[in-house]
Amino acid sequence: GIQVEQSPPDLILQEGANSTLRCNFSDSVNNLQWFHQNPWGQLINLFYIPSGTKQNGRLSATTVATERYSLLYISSSQTTDSGVYFCALRGYSGGGADGLTFGKGTHLIIQP
Amino acid sequence: NAGVTQTPKFQVLKTGQSMTLQCAQDMNHNSMYWYRQDPGMGLRLIYYSASEGTTDKGEVPNGYNVSRLNKREFSLRLESAAPSQTSVYFCASSGGPHNEQFFGPGTRLTVL
Image 1 (tube, rainbow over the protein chains, first blue to last red):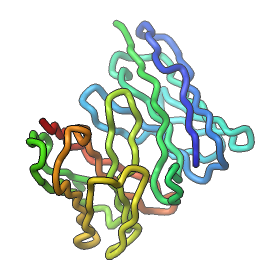
Image 2 (spheres, chains in turn blue, orange):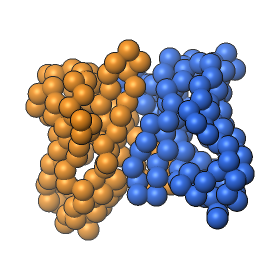
Image 3 (cartoon, helix red, strand yellow):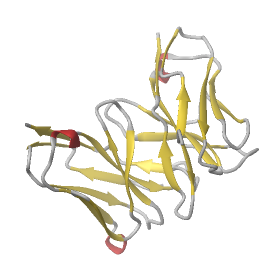
């Protein structure tokens, strides 16, 4: 089944810093999503990015499908960026094709 | 549009009790999903429904049943709750050209 590994597991930064979160995956990708889980537990869609680069404000993401990794960049961090960032790919270890397999996430804390 | 809604938000059960978690979406999506999230983990797929009238097991289906009541609604039932089912449960739906998944706010379930 698909394996999804995220790094680093934890990251503590000062407000205004930049960060790069990495997602490595074991299989070919046809659907990769990045999510932000805020401190209240809500899952917020950030990017759908099976390949290429996208930007949305201070956030951008790049997926290099041939090398099986994706990167999420956060620039000029704000305290509201705190939370857990998940990478997820279509397909799951049980063999089905339709659900998402999640990494364990990167827990980001932005200090004022 | 409300997106994906879930009820209840919180629930406490005793071992052996049963309950049904409700999920509804108003995005006219064909596919719906149930996931569970345990502390420090990503989400794991319990069951999914690719279309009205069909359901399939995910990675961790034991102890659960589902019903796709119609295109909008997908319920998850615990027939005899166990402490190992203490978790946060998320419902999701997907559709559109990329089949991107969108999540509800979650149900926090504690089984004593």
